[in-house]
Every structure is written in structure tokens, then in C-alpha cells.
Amino acid sequence: KKKKKKKFFFFFFFFFRENHFDLYGTMLKQKSIFTHVFEWTLFGLCVAYTVCLVHLGFQTPKEARRQTRAVAATQHMPGTVWTAQDPEEPFFEKEYASDCSIYTPNATEGPFHTLSDAFFDVYTFSHVADFFGFALLWRNWKMSWAVSVFLEIVELCFRHQLANFRECWWDSVILDILGCNFIGICIGMMWNYVFGRETFDWFGESRPEQLEGDEKTEAAKEFPTAEEFTRNAPFFRRLFCIATPVLATCFGMANGFYLKYLLTVRSENPLVFYRTAGWLFMGLKASEEFYYIFVKRTTKQGVKFAVILFVVMFAELFCIVQVGRGVFEEPMPLWSVITIIVCLLFVVGWALRAVPVYLSLSLTTIFLFYMTFFHLDKGYQSLSWVLGIEVPNPFA
Image (cartoon, rainbow, N blue to C red; front, side, top):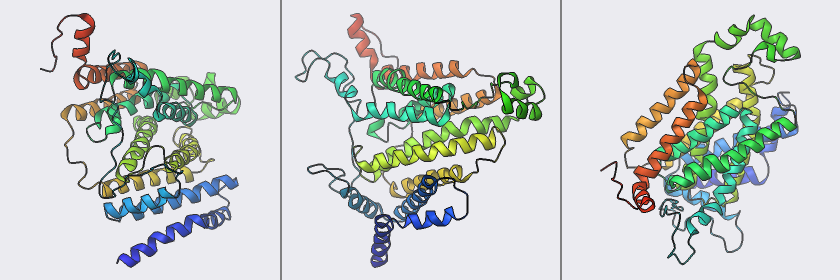
């Protein structure tokens, strides 16, 4: 049995090293479903990545970490440790909520070392780059902001499992949502505007008289009046078109953090960058296909990348469940479950057009600040120090 596992493992090294995925991509190209060499090469890589995830899912956690370490070792720079030394244990990364003080006058590193440590961190650039990519993917201000807020809610609700998700209130609300995410979204939407990329109307706010040319003619044929165009689309269709981009993005980002933790890979490893770049390029095609199929009701873009994206997502989830058996034993707090349910109800409200998007996102951000400042980070102690009076613990 071990001999078979070793042969199977080295097959994947041979598969990637000798670029045999090109052969698979060339076979796909002959079917004339791809318009560019980059498309079938990317599709072949996605299929190979999916097969590798399924393979790791059928290994023991120790064996999966050992094989991942072997691959990560080929991507190293001299003197750099990319993975955990012991494949028996998960890799514990930096916890950002160990000290949430803004001003520490007696610290040897400096009075504002907590702010500087959080700002000059790999995830600061990562947040800007990620949301620049999300703006290119979804091409909509509201959808990009919804993804920004909901990703922080995911980190809040699952911080009992991953140390990377434990952040201070100023890191989560100010540095991430109002800082890095905002900058990335603005750059991405400006990119879309400068290069004339079509904006996607996920919330059904465009009217036929606002469209031009062929788009106006097609919309008038499908929806004779503006009211029908904006109001009479089926509820489940609107819900599916709004919820899928948000949930797919949250799943994709969360999967990356869990895979790094369970397979003992550091954030600076090039494998993490390769996965993120693959998700971005795959998402650029998948989002366009999904929008044209389910919102515009046309199949001229095909469904190949939209399908493979969901296959990759569930393959990553399968690998996480299999490798993470017995690792996460702490139950989810009740307030986390309630928070997730309320956020899902907000999405349903968007589909019903009963809840304004920006208002619900603002309320969610206020709740995020309240939970991280007062409950999780013991913010009432900091408030007592600032005001000079004793502020009672609201959770006592």
C-alpha cells in the first residue's frame, strides 16, 4: 500500500515537472472550446491542481503534510524555512491580536510598534492586491464592498480556529476595511473605467434607458418596460446571482488560510502566490461566464471556467475536511452562528430589495467594530484609560 502511495505521489511530480498538463490542454484545444493558448493552459493547470487536492485528501494528515513539504522545499530561498519542521503538528502562524494597544510608551520596540508591525506586514499588501483583483472580477462597487465586509465577518466568526483570523479592532475595521480594501477596490474600479471594461449589474439596478446600442435592444426584448427589467426577475434567480459571488469569494479566501495551516505552509511561500494568481485568472473568466449565463441569459461565453472554479473550490474543501480531522475540536460560539445567519438574511434581503445594500454593510461593520473592540479585545479597558474613568465591562 505504501509503495502505491509513493508511486502515485511521484506521478504528480512527473506530471507537473514535465508539463504533461500541456498535452491535456492541447487535447482540449482540439475541441475548439478555447479561444487562446492561455485559456487551455490555465484550464489544464486547474484540472491538475484539482487532482492533486483529491490525492492529498486521501492521504493521512502526516503524509499529506510530508508531501506538501517536499513540494514547498523546491520553492525555497537559501536560509528560508517555508514549512513547519514537524509534519506531525499543524503550523502555527502569527497571531495579530496578542497586543491591541495603540500606544505603548514603555515598549523597547517603540511606542507605536503594534501599528508598525501590522502595517509593514505581508497581509497589508495582500489585502490591497486581493481587492484590486476582486474589483476586476466582480466589476461592481456594491459587490466589492459586500465581499470586503463579509470576509472580515468570516475572520471574526472563525477566529477560534485559526490564529491568523485573530485581529485587533483597528486592524480589522480601520486598516483592512477602510484602508487596504478600500484602496484596492478604488484602484480596481478605476482600472475597469480607464480600460473600458463592462460593469456588471449584480443587483439588477440598470434600466433599459440607461443602456446603449445592442444591450438596450436585447434588454427591451426580454423586459418590455423598465419596471419589469428591475422588479420582475424571479426571486431565486436574483438570490443566486447575488449570493454566489459573495459566498464563492469567502469560500475561496477561507480555503487558502485553512490549507496553509493544515498543510504547514507559510504565507511567504511561492506556492501561496501561485494559488492566488491561479484563482484570480480563473475567476476573471468564471465571473464573466457566470454573469452572462445567469444575469444576461446568454451562453456565448460558455461555462467551462465557471464549472472548474466550483470543482476546485469543493476539491479544496474536501482536502481541508480530510486533512483537518481531529484538529479543530473547539465548538463554534453561539454568537458566531447567529452572526452568520444574520449576514445570510441580509443577502436574502438584497435579493428581495427590502434591505439597502450600503445600509446593511454599514450596520455589519459597526457590529464588527463592537465585537472586536468591546468583547474580544477587551476594549472597555482601553476606553477607561482614555477617558480616565472606570468603564464597566458590558459582558460581565
